[in-house]
Length: 99
Image (cartoon, rainbow, N blue to C red; front, side):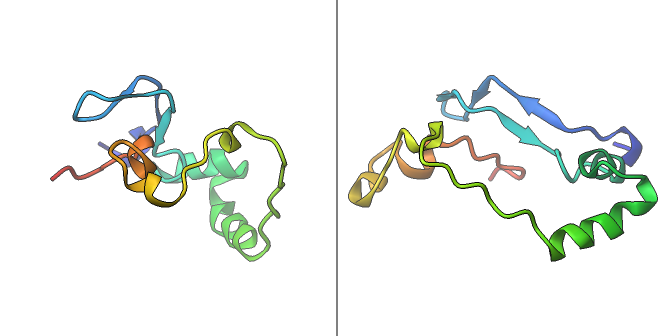
């Protein structure tokens, strides 16, 4: 695919190779599909991408901590993480090169 034709892809009906459905969407290529995608994501002109990216990396926005969020609703700890289907198996982790 030509670089100019690359786009970000949002998958909302995520199913793994074993048929497990996930209710978490997955995005691919959101920030690395092409220089044009970087430009849009950074909100700058194409010739400013390198400068804006370097400035952002040197002075990142501090995280906003919250006490109550959907990601806090499910907590897995200890040996529960080793149970089948728990831990990272609960998340739709994209595999770009299967096998």
